[in-house]
Length: 366
Image 1 (cartoon, rainbow, N blue to C red):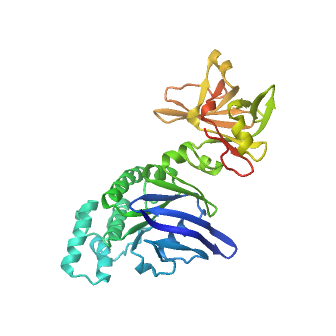
Image 2 (cartoon, helix red, strand yellow):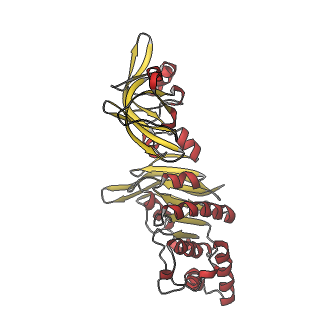
């Protein structure tokens, strides 16, 4: 069921277009992530939802009602900020209780609600402490508690984990997702961290320069990126993207990347009907490339040299170089090679992605 809808939402700051004609539906009880690099418009979009900014054009619809010009306090939303935004002179209890005191609830009811939220977040023993006496993770839990205690219809979260160390961030990702499902509260979550987005979201809305690039579940986003931007932004390491040209030779179709060519005859029909010209961009995931060593290297699509090796325990990320082209490849953890060693490179033709260089849109179904 629809919870929030953006209709042609646009926000300009002078000549700068921060959000450009955004159309997006957020469903009840889902956790949707707005993902993109700094400056892509995701935080501005969140502020437009919260009422902290007013749009230059378009509307925000919630529960079927236009709330575009509704005051923030009347929007039935709670926002969790990157900086926690806790009152330093108040204890954790008072920080959580603050929204309830504003509503002038009875003291007994306030204490009951704060205790319930504290138990939910496992911070019962921290309620007497002030923010300076708490760790980053504990402060974030208090900030979450203040948002939860209001019992909003929508949570808005602006990079709430970005100030934490990597280990704690990974732990709290799971905690946040579990908490959101337990509460069943519609959540709009902003981050620039694609690992965070992939691990938490029901759906991800990828933005770039104010424009919505794609909205899909994480798995769909990874395996079927709609644009070359999405392809290069999603994945660790990201997809390899190489400029190339579509050529025909001896009745076969090839992608010519300058330093090497790849036979794509099986996809010739799709390319002819969806590409706007002969200039394309080849995309291939690191796990869809094979390194061949020794005599087997001659069986690859081309010969390249080892450029860098990044051991990561269970796997190794090897970068090979062919002329001025670099390809990152995911290989098993026991892979061994020397820098400069010549190896064969074999690309899984069934897993390649191709994008129109002019429009950046996907032009084949991999």
